[in-house]
Image (cartoon, rainbow, N blue to C red; front, side):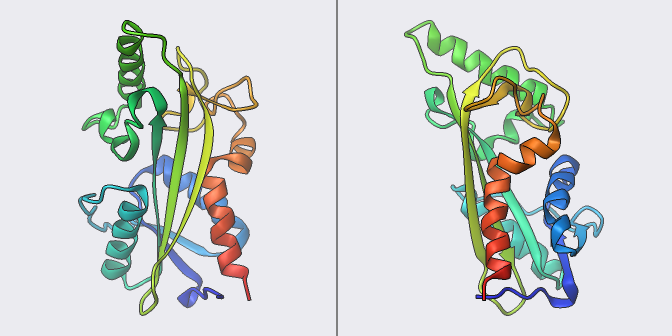
Length: 204
């Protein structure tokens, strides 16, 4: 199906400036007029779902209903194998009320270190990104991407945001935080989800 966006406008349903910048860069080739939920002063809905896909749908549909425009949300997070998939959908909450991801990365490391006192553990992890496009009078569509890697300590690099400095993707010797943003954008979990989103926009 071809997904035509009314007036070529799209609300990015996020108040996270790092995420808005990254999503805007990925949307740039589409030539859309992008507006963030923060710019529109839209309320942030409580994320009450138990999956990335569910929370992405919740956020996109809330932004669409509040703005009257098509809205794209991103619910993403870090899943660490040895922590039974945590922090998962609670990735942002691990950063605390100040959204301090240095605190969040330290918490992941502390949890891994505690597990290591019992038995050797894997440092394998993956990022998940679920995008949801919500449009007035149309069913919402969800697109999911995943990238696998491992946790490293101490964090390395100043690029990216969130857990990027502590995540080293498979096949690379540097973290997302050390990568040139263009390189990361070409292979990240978010890039994979956007590839599916782009295909839905252009499909006949």
